[in-house]
Length: 240
Ligand code: ADP
Image (cartoon, rainbow, N blue to C red; front, side, top):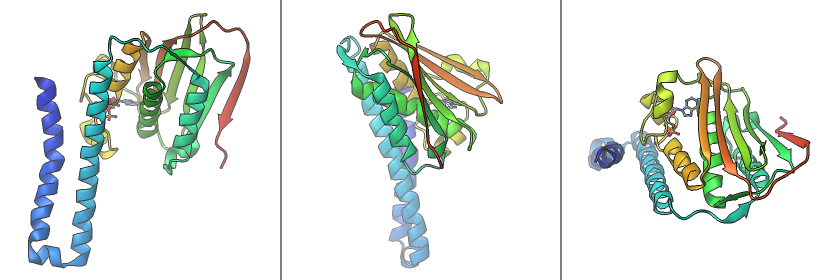
């Protein structure tokens, strides 16, 4: 019940803004001035995009939940996937693109997984690290074997961190430490809930470690498809 109420509220706020601006634009005085019209259209566009992100995340969440009891079966090359997401985000045009570092142990064992969902998981975690980390500080995606049965993926940032009392609640839908900040950064409040559901479906483990004023490291453990033994490591950074 809370979820439906929260989701409706999250959708109603941008919708009310859009309807308000449509009405104002219909008024000859405001709608007739090109500069005002452009300004209003920009706000309407931003609010519509916010609704779109929210609907996309709600649909993802419901799809992942619907598949909850269907174990993923395909071997997924997590090293390749993490490198791919790193490259996409590096080229995304964000100011933070040049701060991204991929530090992947090679060869990394395959994991058993759902490729699209694991891609979304890495996107969400790196997206958060980019949003909440301090500009100009590194965002590191790291992957290595953990024992002979798991693969460990971590995403770390140097940001304001998260106070301990918030940590247990971060994967609740729509839970945010600072709602204004999250909204200003385009957040839906669903990113970590989606990550948690993906990890659960993969029978993995998930942990957030954070120190206020220092930064945050999110760790995900995923079942490996086969054991590995090697010790080569590659680091990819984006040069200026
Ligand atoms: P949002 O869309 O608000 O980012 P998430 O579910 O991804 O939603 O995260 C929930 C909240 O957890 C965020 O609003 C933010 O307060 C906090 N958070 C998540 N990742 C980080 C991080 N790397 N550093 C600091 N705070 C974070």
